Amino acid sequence: MRTSQQHSRENRWKSLRCAVVMLGLLLVLGGCQTKEPVTVVSPQVWNEWSVGQVLDAKTGRQVSLSEWVDGLAGYDVIYLGEEHHNHSHIEAALTVLRSLVSRGRRPVLAMEMFGWEGQPALDQYLLAKEAARAEFLERVGWKHNWGGAFEDYEPLVQFAKEQRLPVLAMNPPKPLIRQVVKLGLAQAKEQPEWRQWGMEQEAIVDDPAYRSRILSQLQACHGGGAPEDYQTMYEASMVRDEGMAKTVTEAVHRVRAAGDQTQGPVVSYTGGGHVQYRLPVPNRVARRIQRGLKEVTIYMATFEQERAAELYQTMQEGIADFVWLTPQGSQGAPRRCR
Image (cartoon, rainbow, N blue to C red; front, top):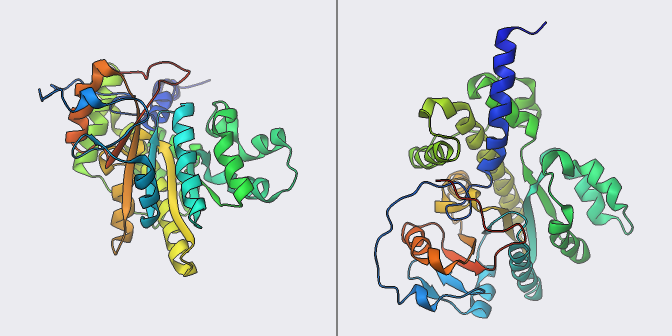
């Protein structure tokens, strides 16, 4: 017979587990967000915007796509933040990868859509001349780790396979994240899974700016409540982003150790919530590497003219270095919390 405490834990987990996944989807425009006043500025800048443009976030002005893409080869890490399953965003990522390859570079693609435990299966699939797709998806744990249509992201994997490029599973295992939600970070660190996945040496840094933004988003998306109600969800978010940063950092070190100018850069492909304001993953990678790191953040956003002023505001606040305006995805307009 289950105790009341067990029932409480199960109910808490059921109500929180979706939110943990949603933390990877948090987009200021395309995901959970709080409503903040928008500064009134001249509409002249955003009246010039249209789908397909890349904007310098500091000025709001369009940059030359061809020149800008060519310049990306000079970075150690390129962060691409998507709205999940938006085909235009996947095509934008392919544009970046194709440009790098055309310049003789061998980028390393890191994808949120794969969990660490699926890396061996992913490696085998990329190297195999003939590979059964269904068997690959089963072995890589696609349904368990991601659950969406693999067809949406298959073009990225297929391009890497054709070009013999490495693809890194970026996401920490879900059981690890679930333990943090259920037990809290302190107790989760004592579990064998923490050592199994090499997390015992990892610093989980509680950044005040990150905390403020994530907690406000959680409150907006889940009916309010006190910040302490979301503490373990917040801790799970930190662990997930630190885990992703661990993957990117190790990739940068391997590229540098190779001593081959054709290797790299690392192209990180995640939901925009892991890129915005550099807080989730980019700052954590920068903290780990420090010396000589060159990174750029690119936020891909569905362009809606009626929300242009709001987008301009987030750009002024530093949502990313560049914003890539795209059409709406097949799943419709991004969800927004009120």
